[in-house]
Length: 400
Image (cartoon, rainbow, N blue to C red; front, side, top):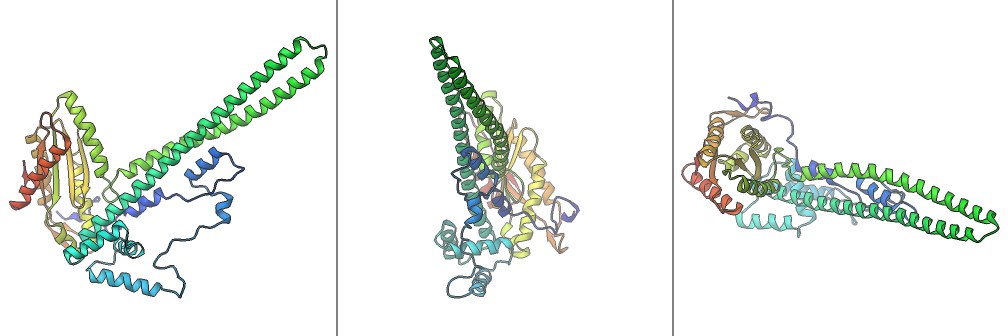
């Protein structure tokens, strides 16, 4: 069956990129106005609002290959460097490859820069598969850092909200103390007019402060609700694979830990399967990285169909997927995974945009079951060893 017959498979629409996820996390540096409410200003930062100072003092742009630099316009030179880099490594001019080259030239001594250099030195070049893995790791690191910053700002909001509540409590206490003092003064006073005037002014002041505090608290509650929704969305995004939409490795590791604890309490079996697409580098090299992305999405969609309330599917990295099967024995898990393997292997896949035949695509898998007293590390290690043997013995098979 041709891949183009499946609406969730290969398509001529550009595959979603991790950079879209990164942009959702983007926050701008802002200056806190001295006359502004700390809570409003800080929540404004998280919600993406600009202060007057931000608009008055633009932040200098970071260097980029298209930004003119002192000494003349170097755009053409930068384009030539990036083009030469892609051509030298046999990389297609896709947005992801341009992004990788841009990051490499802008920050050659960054972790990504060192990783690219090591790959070129050890492999004699940078393959499309390696480039995809390096860029994915780089983007995941950025997303995690930005989420951490976001959570840090949320903590600041909570602290400032607590400060507002404390200030309101202090005002109420001060009002009570002053009111008690005036009441004590009334006991021995023959001139009540001054006391009544003082009480009236004190009460009016307290009413005004209470009204202001109430307004600020209503605003704070609304903004806290918005912030919580944004944080929940950000956390979900940080645990999703941008290309396939599956859970990513970070989310899988958290789920694995929880599931092991749950199965330990309920005495249910727990199996895990590593699935690795066979000859994926050849697919990338022959048909291009964009087609490789579509194959990844297709396989992800196929594997997700085996999912149910007791099954968790994630992209573990590169062309490798992992399936967590709760309440399944090792034999049951093997049969489920093997059914998906046979389904994929029976298809002739075609690229929708070019109508070019990709042909047969298969995956190999290794399955293991959690042993009594075992942990996640041991479980994954045994599944990985089974996958290695399946690859070594010819691929397109499932081993225990």
